[in-house]
Image 1 (cartoon, rainbow, N blue to C red):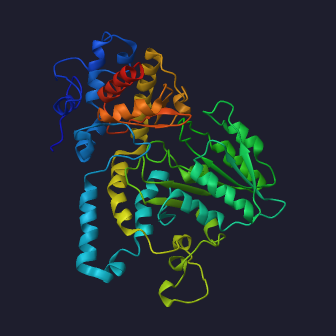
Image 2 (cartoon, rainbow, N blue to C red):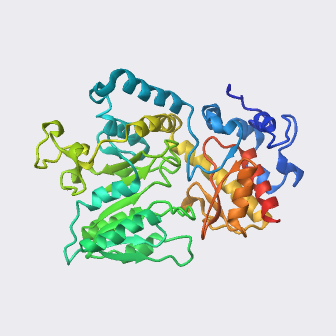
Length: 432
């Protein structure tokens, strides 16, 4: 379907009207204007001309699912770029026509080459990022390289980190780790000062999330990294909920380790996690969770381990080649648009969501301060599962989580009109 040109009134209304989701006309007001006058506070946040100038919306034609849905779930699974189909065809062509020769014609290098494609999004140098299947695997690789001597055996994390990695940390107790869990006082945030206070000379590794998955609270990691440096602890940052919508610069932060994945804001699909290791630290880590791809001479098939000197040392078994093909179009899109521009739009649209939430009297479990907020707004409605499922039935794609509510996440391809319609429908459904 050809890309729709921006309208001075609003964008993409015609496509949405065709799908039956919105009964709009290009010359008329947006749906919420039937609820409130155009001079209402929410509408003063932006103007039709400003919306028309939103160059990021020119990407909409690259995402097939936007033709028939309002897609507000990029914090869970980003929309698939149209280019993924071509990439998967290329993967099939290579396998079908080149067979085993594909390994020496590009496949073997893909974990690092795709990592290089991602590297600018996190401020990393080429050769410092490698692709792995997921965040839990990435963290296991790093933790397997650590020992926990009695005088420095604390693995510190917060109670609001994603459960998958918490389960991993709990397993580290069998290897001598002592878990120190930083609590939240409100179930929404874990302020940096609380984490800093918990770091002491016994801390081996600080493993925390950059953006919390339930509330979208954005942790201020700079003072945490400084404190870890003072006591000789490593910092491993889970940036799954930030990379692609919040600027991250591993060099400016002087960060030791960053992990993340492509499923969400990067629109790269599942199976394409990534691991950054600070170059100065790389050859000091010897992962026990390893395999032949981590060997300096994998095709010598030696029985003794000799670690590769580059990021291949953090690999283990045969890579997930199709997933690496699929991740590339989303990464290229992020490079083209720039994370700073994406962040500015994200803050504007999440602010708009929260303004409607306040207007409608819907409690929110997301920070009001845009500087401490990621790309998602969580609405604490009664029966969040029912509300989310009904929104999905109406082709407004969201999700829900216990202790979070209905999570709504606009992205760079989202219009203000979609935000407004989502909130109108949320209020209608929640009131029933």
